[in-house]
Image (cartoon, rainbow, N blue to C red; front, side, top):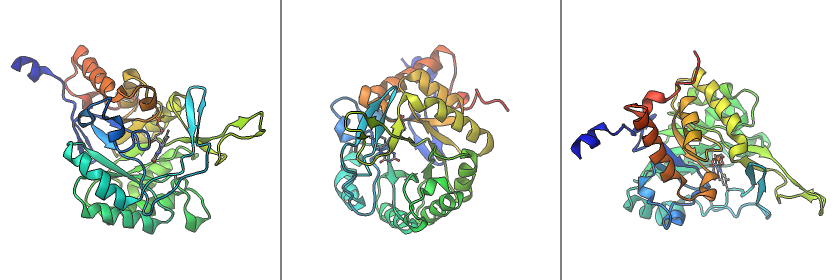
Amino acid sequence: MKKNEDKSPEMIVNLGGLRLNNPVTVASGTFGYGREYEDYVDISKIGGIIVKGTTLEARPGNPPQRIFETPAGMLNAIGLENPGIDVFLNEFLPELVERNVTVIANIAGNIVEEYAEVTRRIEKHKGIAAIELNISCPNVKQGGLQFGTDPKAVKDVVKAVKSETSIPVIPKLSPNVTDIVEIAKAAEAGGADALSMINTLMGMAVDINTRKPVLGNIFGGLSGPAIKPVALRMIYQVYKEVDLPILGGGGIMNVNDALEFIMVGSSAISIGTGNFVNPQIAEDIITGLRDYLEANSITSIEDIVGVAVQR
Ligand SMILES: Cc1cc2nc3c(=O)[nH]c(=O)nc-3n(C[C@H](O)[C@H](O)[C@H](O)COP(=O)(O)O)c2cc1C
């Protein structure tokens, strides 16, 4: 018994100061606040739960229709429906802390000051291990251009959040850009501890009977297996050029997908759309990763991070 335990591969990872018991996290907006999945999975076994995106004030979200299935993926235009940071901190967070879950907050805002204020409130609470910054949000002060598509806005928002907190700050990069490395470098310059990538790719669908866009918001974010090759390519590029640990995701549906993400440079991975197909996917992938390491006599998950990247 003891011998076996000694031999089991090391699954703990360090993501820019965020310690995870294993590299598997669930992506923001696809796992609610964890409790929605409690009937299916022991949520405390997941490396980290990235909770639904939270803003300073409550938001009602976009008009329907908000989701639409596409070949090999889905479009969503939820519009950050959430109860606001105070309700999250006071009503939802304590339950997760009690269950020993590693909670990563995901925050969003219309202006830099909103990100900073949400961060100040998080900082006052115990129980949040890291902050993921959703920068795929319109920057109201810059005419609605997404923070995540402008290097200066990325640097500014990361810097503002970093100055308010001692826990790791992980900007989540938008793939809707021409040069992802430039954006990653801007996040690094702002003081990011790690990078999360990628968020959804902007897309749309048309209903040929109504002859109108399907989504109430017209545009939505494409996720699922359709975006995996794009995510892998972007992570590969960033891993080569930027010296920050990466939380990689986009279309992970099984352990082989997870391994691909790790091999292009992800220290940890996130599962989004996959949770809707198989609510136990996180546990399955944790087991699958351990089995892969054991079968290949690899002592630590960290040993295969970036092994596919050619220098
Ligand atoms: C229904 C839905 C809601 C989402 N909500 C958020 C959110 O609130 N904040 C955020 O940063 N990303 C959000 N995302 C993006 C996911 O966290 C993830 O980055 C993206 O879906 C790509 O991963 P996947 O292909 O594994 O789903 C959402 C995605 C979906 C499908």
